[in-house]
Amino acid sequence: MKKYLFLASFFTLALSGCNTGKHANNGAADGAAQTGQTSHTAQQENTITEKRWKLVELGGQPVTLAENQQTEAHFVLHTAGSKVSGNGGCNVINGTYTLSEGNRIRFSKMATTMMYCPGVEQEGEFLEVFELADNYTLHGDTLTLNVGRRAPLAVFHAVYLR
Image (tube, rainbow, N blue to C red; front, side):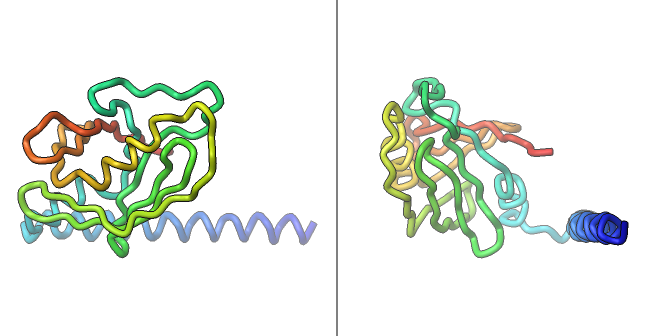
């Protein structure tokens, strides 16, 4: 019985610790909004970071999962360390990013695992987006990565995990 009580207490503390951090971050954001002291760059970062961006269109074509593909192509821009992580549909991707005024974005130090997954041909083109993209457009929960003023390289939808 003590074992179950200990486990229940442990999970309760672990979950309450997660909620405390979440509320602390929301409180900081609320406080900044109330004082009106957020910068334009901070507002940009808050809109596209810490969200899972699922690839829905690549090179003007809709993206669907291949028959044996287990993971959808996606990425997340983490504010801590300006890190980017994700998956190309087969391989894990990691790197860094920089945001600047005018919806400018640059990816660097991108690396990927090198597994072979038959049927996941779009992955190479998806990874190339990170090399070419220099700006983004955000409309609600739709993010496009672009190069110059040409047609979007890729279109993503935000996925909110519960």
